[in-house]
Image 1: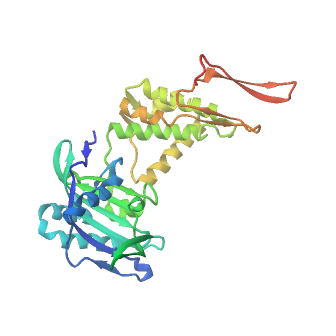
Image 2: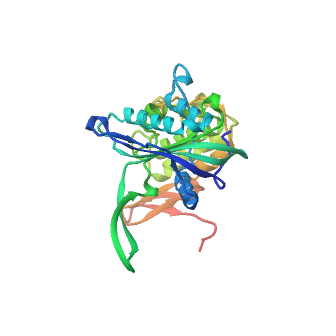
Image 3: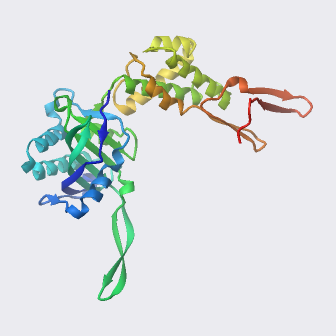
Length: 353
């Protein structure tokens, strides 16, 4: 199971700053000459802005195909946790590594902040963390100040905390297994550049994560029409198919891809092939395969079930919204010969106000 992480007591006390250009554009790298110490008056606000993006992300860990000790970002983080005096040196090394990996024309330049964060609670234990944030967008804002007894207005530029582009939070736990890392990239949920080339991380997989991933893939596949090659299914048919998939998870303690194909995909070779393609695209984006056998955890199913449903749209300006608890028997579809139009009947026990 992934750990419980709480930030309510966390405090950031030091930061190393950098400006990361794009080497292909001949843009430079600028790094701090000394550690930036966060003032007491600013610490609470600064910490909150740093940690706000990391409220609900899957867990990753550092990885390397040959040896974890060859993952440069991991080694820099480990050195910082082991010796506070090397923070500036290793923080600048992290910035240099990111700069070296930014050699693609689509990678934007930006400001980098590497901060030490204390008192993060991980499973109730006081834990240090290292936060790395990159902001690629600077926005204008107005500043009003008092000068010589009068008010003045000025236009300035700065970072919008709501629009931090990339970030990771490295928790000083599970060192030998590659730490526990939270990460995000606004440009894409699974950015090859940020996750693989700079950080070098992989997902921490357990039964909860696998249940969420595979059940979510099944729902997105069937509700997206992947189970109907003709493309004639409407929202009700797609939702019924997705609910059939969720019934499989509800009625099994263990997931087997073979059983799933037989019971949900109905042994249809075309549908099985399309689902495997859907799964393969997700694996390519995330950078690692998904297991075909695992224990199903019921807590994760509630999260996936909230994604069930859809909207039936008609050319008469009417829409019927289907909620996650939609029942197939509640709808009856037919054709009215007199009007020459199709119809849908909605059955209910009681009308909600």
